[in-house]
Length: 178
Image 1 (tube, rainbow, N blue to C red):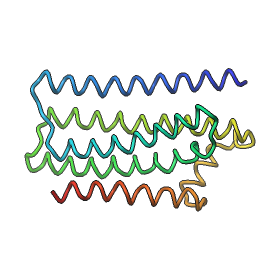
Image 2: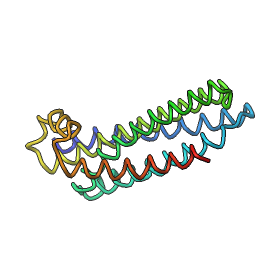
Image 3: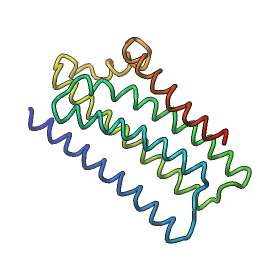
């Protein structure tokens, strides 16, 4: 049973590598074509990178030492990633509408955002695997556990989510203003 769980996590880690490779390939494609992202888009990706680094650090801590607190920190951050991706997509659509972004650059930008979101989703899976490993009574109730978190039924989750969302949305807002 333990080996089966580790095998599932190895697959998740492999996915992380695939998403990272996709991001590298998108950057290489832009470079080959001589296409540049706008300063705003680069800043937005930088903020997302900071947020993803935090998510990845928590996933590494959770897995490395079966740190349940680190595992519990992942899901609120993952929700913030989802929020940020939606905000950034809307800003990107506006840039396309007003001609501040080309279709070629925009396609790569959206692909990178998608891969960033998938990295976060994968880290959520790692966190959930650690939580259910440490708290086996949740194993058959993972969907209920996540549902309750997302419905606002866990004050610790809510606080971590609000704190992270406020921080990263503020960073994003400062990019839009400049």
